[in-house]
Length: 145
Image 1 (cartoon, rainbow, N blue to C red):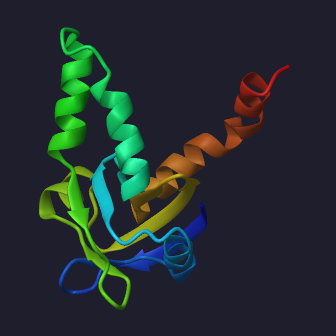
Image 2: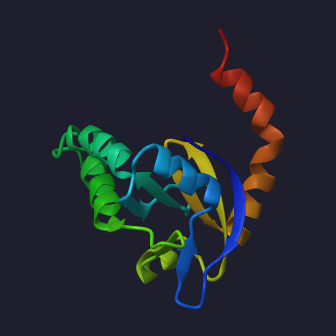
């Protein structure tokens, strides 16, 4: 559903423009409401409502008696906000989520099939630089027959 990498800038009101390619995918999936929350590796995750419900179902089935399960669910769900893009495809990112992901102005949006990741431009560059050399080794380890 979501593929590619797009550099954008938050507008002066702190709104994020969803790339037109992603907006087209949302339209094709009849997805109006999105959910944004804390992601992993200091980025934000954006899910369609359908995918959010699927993820929520998985996480709700985790045992609440395990400390790591409770901690993950608390951080993941307490950061969640439902947003509806305006006519220009903009969504307002809450301040606490921008702070979590070190987002100030320049961002990179990454399509990861079932979700969109929003990175600060600086953190994405660091992550990409430190990860690109191991891409082939990771692929070999994950895709071994």
